[in-house]
Image 1 (cartoon, rainbow, N blue to C red):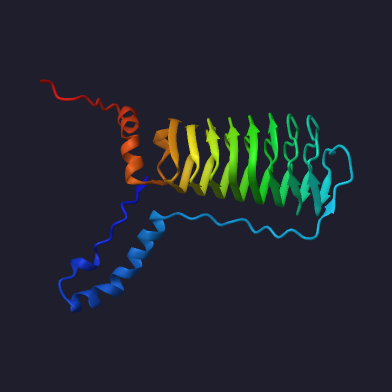
Image 2 (tube, rainbow, N blue to C red):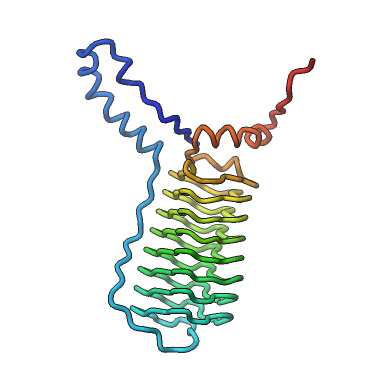
Amino acid sequence: MAIDDGADGSDRAHGTARGAVRGGARGAAPRRKRAREAAPTARLPDVRLPPLRPYGGSDLEPEGDYDGLEFIEADFVGQRARGASFMDCRIQRCALDEARLSRARFVGCVLDGVRGVGTDLAEAILRDVELTDARLGGVQLHGAVLERVVVRGGKIDYLNLRKATLKDVTFEGCVLAEADFGGASLERVVFRDCALRRVDFTGARMKDVDLREAAELDIARGIERLSGAVVSPTQLLDLAPAFAAQIGVRVEAPAG
């Protein structure tokens, strides 16, 4: 786990201009390397929707192929479309309660204002996807693969990402209540201006995960799995009691 302290006094350590010049060439690369290590970034999705055709069908179909379509305020409650493929689609204000979309593929898609409880997206693939202003609860994304995904705004309760793979994923301005990242792999994942409440990182593997700009950081389990993440000094102080408890340190005021 890295801690960003925002300070760099290396140039002041050189007593003369000659020392600064001599040391500059040798020290620039290490400083740039440290800066990259301390400030993970995630690649953003490349979503370029073509002119879309309105979806004129009724129920989604298992293994269905949906390309260049616009779904607006469609009711997919309880529908079964395991293994369906959505390419260059906009899915806007659609109801997804209890929809069965396990192993579905979403590539180059925008999901805007979707809502639902108990949506099954287990082992789905989301690549170059924007998810905005969602209102979801109990979404099953265990074993899923998320690559170049932005989750912006909205609220997701009880998000299940156990054993999922997240690479280049940004959570921005959203609320994640009791999200489960147990056993998941997170690489270049950024949490920005979002609330993480009672999150579970048990068994998670992290690389270049940036938690510094999270509006709330409440870790229920798995605090020992933060190796590979970067937090701010303030967050470190807030997490100190949990770290102490994890390694068996008792914190008590001196007697008398």
